[in-house]
View 1 (spheres, rainbow, N blue to C red):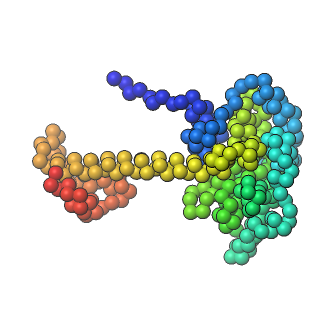
View 2: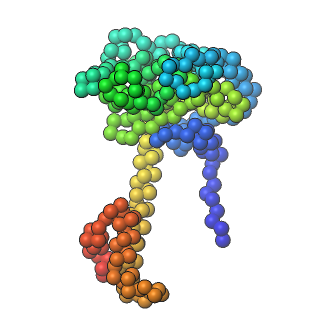
View 3: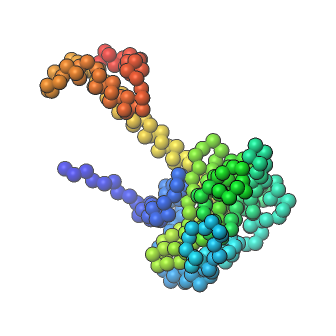
Length: 316
């Protein structure tokens, strides 16, 4: 009988769909965390169509930076504030660029002869500290291309610099913006980073309507500032990490269980006739050891023997 695919709830499938379009790198948001926060994606309706039309009309031609590799007719927003305030409902005091506040989140890297600093700070809901940092770049500056003009001692991409800034300041998330792309970056200390990039011009197309709706779902004013505890963006980002940890632990347990089953089978093999012409080679232990080395990225035969002895597999 053919195996039946597990049924996926419609609300989870909707989030998986728009995440599939955007292709996040690493972990940013988990569909299950979005669902548990009660976020519902708007897929259609006259209001969505009208908002997308206003967004389309607001796009402006961008003058690319010298090292930009995008087309000259690329459109977007010359300022992040315009996108956040006019299309995501943010207010001016929710994007702060006061020099004194920015200085508090600047980090000097003397060993590299460089100082990392944001261009804006998004305040925490409590009013104390920051929940996100912002780095605006020249229009269409490639986010993942290393600097090669000799300006910096540290040859790193804007993405790498921004991740370093987040880790150094302890602010776990932020926006990297170049006019044509808005990237949500998550870089918790001690954990792997992730990022999710919205191609702003594509969001204006009919084929990009789902991504446009996801932009408001994820970064709308209510999601960032006003939703109840446990349902704001910062909560969903943290919950996503928890979901990932649960999944990773479950998979680790499954792999470990399969490994012990494999070892137990190797231990029992000499007591059962092998229906193969080269059974002698199999019984010699060379093939199991080779298989385990491939499986466990270099575990040697003595190490395998130790594992078998510790778990009492030789007595199986």
